[in-house]
Image 1: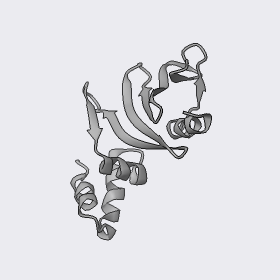
Image 2: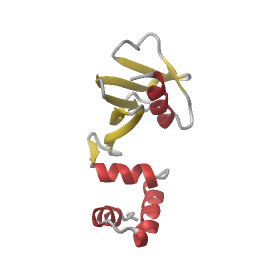
Image 3: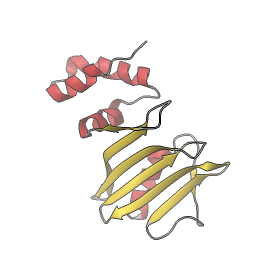
Length: 141
């Protein structure tokens, strides 16, 4: 992974607070980033192969809440696998490639906003798989 690819991935996860490279924990196989005021929130970019990177992000308690797999093609990291911790439980929720694509295109700050965005695009969706995924994600009251 080159510096440009690393920065592109880092920018995606550094939404509000910026991550800072940890010289202590980074090595040839992984880049570790921490938040300046928090010892528990880490972002780890681990090189799995020449074209694969696993991204792990922890919350303020040190629990891994995100595990994404990126493919490095043509200097552009492409997310090919996403897992998110299900709130209030101890298991991860895997997403398929079509769901990942929709999340990155129409994902909002929370589930209700994301579902509203997906509902808004339903009339224009022609692909049956996309239409099925978008219509199955109705918000619960």
